[in-house]
Length: 316
Image (cartoon, rainbow, N blue to C red; front, side):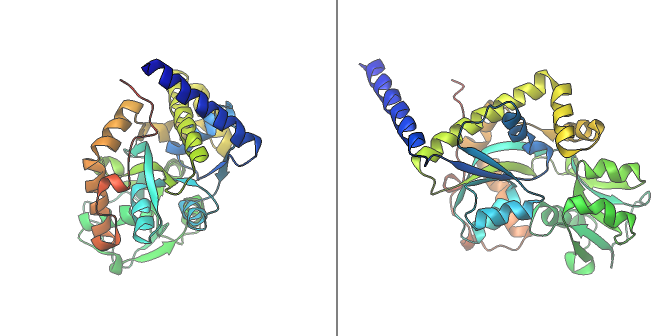
């Protein structure tokens, strides 16, 4: 009897899927921007692992991804945990359904000369993409050096522009990520801080709008499956994955190699731990809110309201 019920449910789902696609209302739009942890979506698209109806919007920066989500032009987006906190504080109803990566050195702050033990940061011009990961990350760095945002000059700019700003001598420090970290290092800049110094803090996630319909949620599950399939390709055929990603961004393969070495790509099992246990992610979100001076009452009061593992493949 149990097997019969399961068979009926699956059959109904297939029929519903067919009817939905027939009437053309089965679509899911995802915004993403350049970052090594998000490249699984690109690989999945390249290998035709994404289901019909899924569209990937490739934009230039996290700010663009956030804006598309706010304007309801996309249904999902790849963001950092602190960016999600910002969205929630503005009343944008989203939920975290996948941990795509954890940064362990691929995000960094660089200085144009070999740094001394103590950096004088007062009035330094610092390139950073505001309202995104960079601002939170910069706060962590400044705190460790006994400084604050009010003592520096912020040059609001997305990471793709950072190498040019540095070349023109318009900045004194830069908050950026790979491949721009490697590009700047080749030009003589030095790392003074990176995410390996604050482990389990910088999480990159996939979020969806809470009001997705049933058809879209079916697609979300397929996208998550395609993501893990792409991670498996990276694991077993790393050279091919690096070549494809480098070609996509028109950069040297070594930059992509360096970027992959600076992140942890959680498996399905690890995702179950993070999204079903929730304690670590919730603690990080609370810390982010405090650092960015976001009042607790402006955020959901329970972790299960903003994250879950319901779209993850079962491993039991």
